Length: 280
Image 1: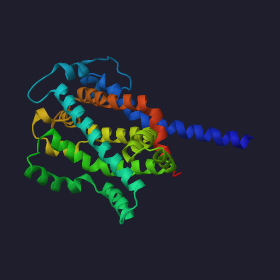
Image 2: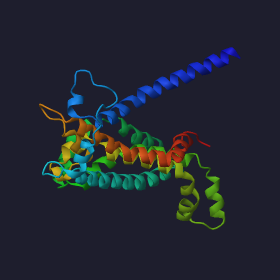
Image 3: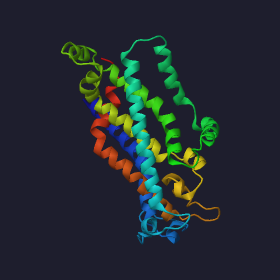
Image 4: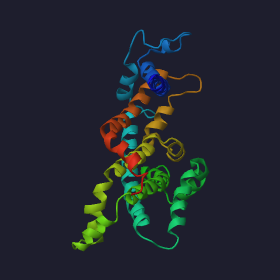
């Protein structure tokens, strides 16, 4: 009994330590966003702001110049992330269902090829994508940036959705076909509703990828008006000085939508991360 209690105590302590390491940067970011510049640059900065200020947040919403427009950057990020999620899910759902349900020559190889593309770093494909989008006239456009994101989100989302479709017994579709349902009706009324946790988890992955991505956005978006939030916030870091209060305030604002989505969808997300891993 004592051994079990000791093991449980050790587990709890380890979990607390891991949570501290995971949450400390986020808490420090929030704390810094309420500090004045003089307090940030002091030799011994305190964790809790001595003189809290909202200047960083205020400047985000009130300052609009040729090189600083937080509202426009936020609108660009929402537009790109939303389209990335929609297109990724449409392709991934249909592709995952096809690979899961239909038997054809090269099916196994295709599955692993789709997964293998996920290990390619973005820096490796940045130059080819830049040339392709330049030839197609898609540079410095939100549609072009969205298409670049989709090339990276679709393989992972397709593989995830394949796992979820594999976990759904095919006998359910066969029973629906016996009752006279066609292929499309079986898919939309029987199979797809059972993959809601999978749709949520893969959709959230696609949204976060489109919301947080920096490398492609900084390379393909050349005008200030087309910048996304990560690129715009990164511009606060200057060569000789950095407005850390404003930068941290912007970082907090970028994080809030993702946190809200996770809190609202955590039930489906946690179920989705585990359900697709087991084939029934």
